[in-house]
Image (tube, rainbow, N blue to C red; front, side, top):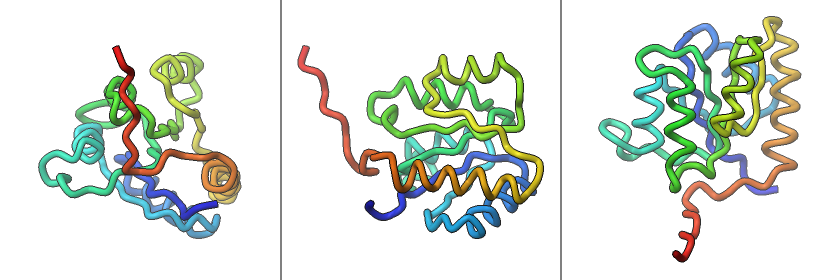
Length: 152
């Protein structure tokens, strides 16, 4: 297992950001966690535009669906449409239980869909499972790797 990859959390709710940070700490996740508050900031961060020109490339993105300005579906679609970015796993982390949101997320190539538990201890357990899979089991692309272009 290599070092824990940097994670980008796209979340507009300050309480959810604080709870996620606490759950990361309690769950033993040592990943560097960057936070952006809306879909525009998420796209600027990942594509390194404006004030995020020097942002680290995330190895994994936790994406809320209900965001101001640009919603999570639009962000997901933009990320998965770009050949230089699409290899970054995107995990939808949301309170939505709607079947259509799950289906739409996967149709836009989300790598996983996790419903945020209401209870803190349950959220910590979910993040421990997340840590086990994404940090210890799955092999992720290195943050600065670029996919080879198909010869046409």
